[in-house]
Image 1 (cartoon, one colour):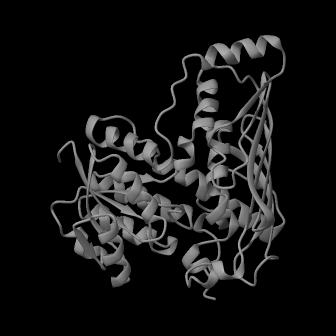
Image 2 (cartoon, helix red, strand yellow):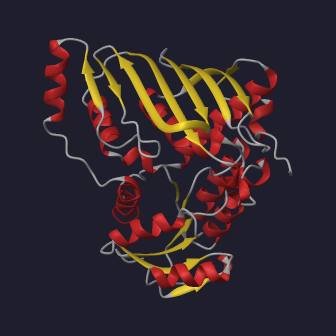
Length: 357
């Protein structure tokens, strides 16, 4: 494996954003192939971005010796088997969310990763936003103090045309609704700051579109550190916005309001008192933002694969999200408050319903 890694992208939806990020890192990656099941899309995307090879079958990429890393931007229902196939072919894999629909599937992926000696890197590009990086920096500097409470709002709009894509709106192929496909990044940001969830209570509803999966949800969380969090999600907002607010002993942190980039600047850090402001200013005086979004994650991934740095996002991070979904769907269906972590004998360990529409 050379320092300049050879990568192939699979999937022409969000995969186009991935391509643009890989190409911004041309000194680190050589984008050698693009794959999509639709031949027209495969050819058009490859031509648009100057990619030498197009393909319509993942297997065509797995047998190639000149590919080190495969980027899966495919429908969620395909992820588990595709990740296993990439690992078995001796290649590293980076994959869009969500990776799976159960903790048992995530644990099977962990086993496959271990056996293969390769790496799985789930995509959580929101962690690499400029504003969110500042909050992470303040946490690392010990400025935040004891966490009290947090709120996360993911209020987006999805009209019926959104669900004309056949795999959307179905448990079997999309793996879930607004919790899984839309709010996953904001909820990952929450947990990456506040840590593990101790218990939760959830309500879900399908009120916006005639689909199989939920498009509204409310979650009430107690974190292991004692902090509380309230998460609200809807796909029926007239004005789209996302917002995260964290209240700590020494400051309140509030995200920007962009629906698809709440991780970006500007964030507000409001001190509880003058001493807190001085500590915030001192801590941020040496803050140097890293690359943003997909570019930030892909650059950190290169350092992990070539220089032995830690993976920027690990399978355990995806497991935490899958556990949140598993517990939330079980709570919504049973009415129970669910304690985490989920044991292997818990009914939710095997996931949530996968129903054909």
